[in-house]
Length: 304
View (tube, rainbow, N blue to C red):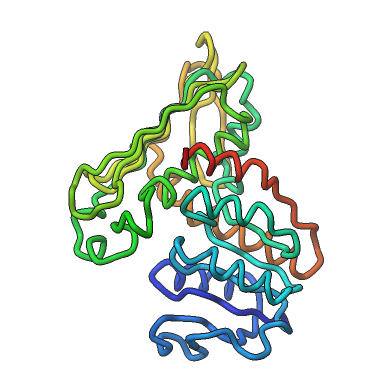
């Protein structure tokens, strides 16, 4: 049986742990949680046999990822590490993880494992513009006001590193490094000190212009609009999450009201695929591959 350690047992951590348990049979040495009693194997510190574990999951709040990564590097941990995005929350931390060479880390960017990624990759030479809007009203809730997400001192780029980073990273992965970028951080709701809204505009050489709006301070809306260059063809029609059909009679695809199932399942399905891929790597069935340069370039654009 595979042995693991899970770090972080908040709302997201609990859902991610369920995915791991569904994907593979795992003996958890410990589940690290702040209060130490949220899980049958809860602990507030790493177990003594941590170095014997096959893998470790880092799913605690983003600002604390670097602390765990540096500790595992210091311990010369030889197993695999699954680290949730964003791996770091500022430029100084980014430079530190870029110098770590003794850990086998897989940084989880689940959109790479979705039909959206496959669609963009297969049609990337034909795409002219992409307009992404992913907003909801988390900033109006008490749990946001009391959380690390709303505190600019520990989460200086706010929704940028917790949500927008997914779409920016996907754009970099598919289209390469942009020729120009403009990222604007706003605090609209005022219910915390960290940015609750991010507007990003990316231009790629011989590729599309990508507009991304992510916010915790608006009424819920999810939209992905993909337009074709010199429109006379495009790819439309989404039926099931696992199967996208294309109809070349339209000049744009609009994944919005007609594709709610697709949009609502995007991150869930992506995380499931990502965890399965990682666990196959732990088991030696596949060689885990990831381009850290793309992650580095994505975060550097966010932080500068």
